[in-house]
Image (tube, rainbow, N blue to C red; front, side):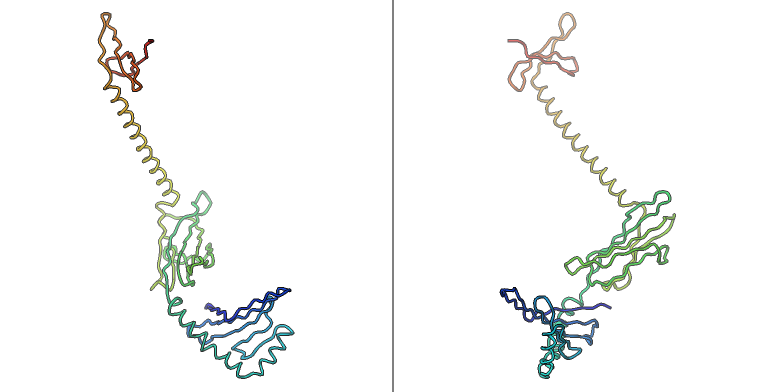
Amino acid sequence: MFKLLILFILQTAVLHTANGDSLAMSAWCYWSKDDLSDMESIRSQIINKIKYVEFNSTLGKYVGFTETGVRNAEAWNKDTARLQALKAEVDTVCKPNAGIYYSNILSKTVEPQVEVVQTKQSEGSHLSWLMCSAYSFYPKLIKVTWLRNGKEIKSDVTSTEEMADGDWYYQIHSHLEYKPESGEEISCVVEHASFKKPMSYKWDPSMSEPDKSKIAIGASGLVLGVVLSAAGFIYYRKKCSGQWQNHQEPSRTSDGSWSPHKHRSSGGETQECLMNPLHLFNTCFIPNS
């Protein structure tokens, strides 16, 4: 059972006097049954943030809360026509507006987005922690339970309240502390108005979220390493091909050594290079002019 309310600001007046006095009047509609049979209308009058008099449709009269409010309530309660008009607002104001809310908002449902994750792994004598989270659902009322091998778990379970997201949607989180056993099946069961039947979400222990994160990070590092290696190799090949096009084949001297050859660098200087037959580790120098 839950209570719904609609606030209608019928009139609000703020009087700025030397003492900063203010007067405000508001109307509220309260109900908790879908057929609106318990609808109640309340009109409050507030002076300087203090409620001094109020009309309640259930009581059918004004009630004063301050000395001035008591005097006004006694005087206004003698006006039966005024009391009847205010009491009629249950049917003329509250119920019609509540019907609009039901048809456009309150009758709508949005399925929750559910996920089951492990928040703490079992280590030695320490227990594991699972969390079942339901996000972005409407209406607020929801039930979350845990099953172990088809049987409901009633101990070592903690849950948050339904928390409002501020945009008509809600979220809730349920935690289970348990000791893992081989071959067991643990699932989170969610019951909500948007479901035709309770929905079960199994926990897959084959790979925890931390393990998935480690694999993703490792794969990203591997791809980055391959890309950088490929870029370095391409740069090296281009640099070597440019040097190869500018060199002259060396010749062997009479004593069997290799003679230097002329090579023009990218800066325009003439270099003499001593090269081995495989053209590896070439040593070049700029001769003195």
